[in-house]
Structure formats: C-alpha cells, structure tokens
Length: 238
Image (cartoon, rainbow, N blue to C red; front, side):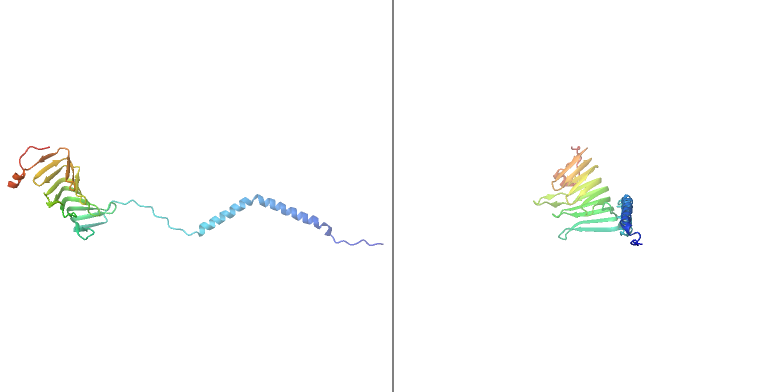
C-alpha cells in the first residue's frame, strides 16, 4: 500500500491569513482616520495649554492715573531768583507763602513781589495779594490789588521814558515780552497822565496802550506838572 506524502497543516493557508491581517489593518486605519482631525485638535490644545503654563508672565503696565490738582511742596517767606545765560539776574520773586501744583507747573504765591530786569536794563516791579507764576517766571497773573510799575529809564536812542504804572483787580504780565493785559477795569498812569478803561492791553516794546470800554483820560501839561506835580481838574477825555 502506497503511503500519501505528508503536508504540514496550515502552510497552504498562509496567503489567506496575510490577506486577512492586511484587511484588518486597513479597517483599523479607516476607523482611525475618521477621528484624526479630532486627535490633531486635541494635540494642539495640549500644546497650547503647555505654552500658556510655561510662558513667563510680565506685569501689565499700570493704567495712567489722572493728575490731581494737589500741592506737592510749599514755601514760606521765600525768594526765588532766575538768571539768564550770562549769569545776570533776570527775575526775583518774593512771597509770604507759595504752593506748587505739579499738574500745571504753576506756583501760587500769597503777598507776592516780583522784580524783573530786561536785557536793556529796564526794571519792572509787580505786586498783588496773590499771583500765579509759570515755571520760568516769565508769565504772571496778579489778582487782588494788582500793581505793575516800570521804573523811569532811557531807551536805545537815549530818550527818557517816564515812570509807568498799572493798577487793577487783575493784571496779566508777560515779563520777557514787556506786555501787560487785563479783561477787567484798570488805571494806567504814565508820568503825570492818568487813563482808565474797562479792559486794556499794553506793549512796551511798541509803546502802544489799547484801552477799551469806558475810557477816560487826564493829560497834565508838563509845565503845570513840573510846578506842583498835581493832576488838574479837567473834563474826562475820550
């Protein structure tokens, strides 16, 4: 009796097994590919969370606070002097009490006296119950018994300029520009002549005084003024 050749079991089914495994892998890939966008989003979210946790935190800039109108320093019975580039005294300010406000850089002074000297040597003195002075002393607002006096002097041509005085409840003096203005009634005295007005503007460089409103003036003849120095009784001039 002839014996049949022996064959190892399962060896003939190997291609079919490989095919089954490949089909299973394809099905798994198809199932996984459906959730791939969701998985990628999850990975990105985890990466973002890690970056947030590990990024150094910087202090946020503080919101700018509105400057308050408050005094940052005060002085009593003081004198402040300003000098020009050549070291010459330009302005000297004296006050019984002064208060500085940093938001406006204004010095508020009680019982003020300001003495200013121009480059040509003209001296101007201002006094008042209260003054508001800017940082360099070039601009002054005078309130309450305000008075500005320019002492007699000579101009560039050698001509004598008489004493000039302004009086009022409010005067705004620009010392460097040698100007004085006011929106309130004033008295202007030039030598022995006197003028009044509801408002005015004076420019010493141009030698022009502009008075507005109810303007009145008294002009003293030089001979009479030299004789007795008194103002004459005259009808108001416009």
